[in-house]
Image (cartoon, rainbow, N blue to C red):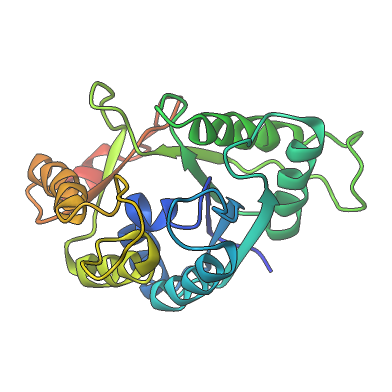
Length: 235
């Protein structure tokens, strides 16, 4: 099957946190969407690979994903290797997505940085016929980046105000990672009581930029063409 929108996240909750609203919205609009998790998150202070896998499947159901896969790369040691790049190429050629989205290239977490580079390289290399995987070559026409640093202006924003509830439910599905007053596990950045409020404040800020309740931000590393500016801005 061909996907319209395929997001790559380093860990099983990354896509939900930063493009969950977009994924839910596109699904409701009738588009085929998917998420590929690069690792199982087995190094996480809370939860296990098995638990996080169940949580990811529940989040996929909430978001209406057509596809959710996990490449099983080592958590905390995602690196740019020929084997890792080839695994991403196989996914791209399998689902032939119209749009690919992944982490922005600058981030404090090395797994996010390396995922960004892996996906960007694979998007290009997937179009090379001499890289043989037993599949037809395919180069996705659009590569987007999410989880932008504070000093990077979005190329565009997606209004997700009507999908806030679905996004929050998908994030909440990853309950092993979030605040639980009964938990005896060590605290993490994600398990702080106000973590979800901080994430929501980011999307609320993006929303104010376009006069909406909530929005999600994307960066594209090339100029965007508007073929009919009157029709575009008349919306």
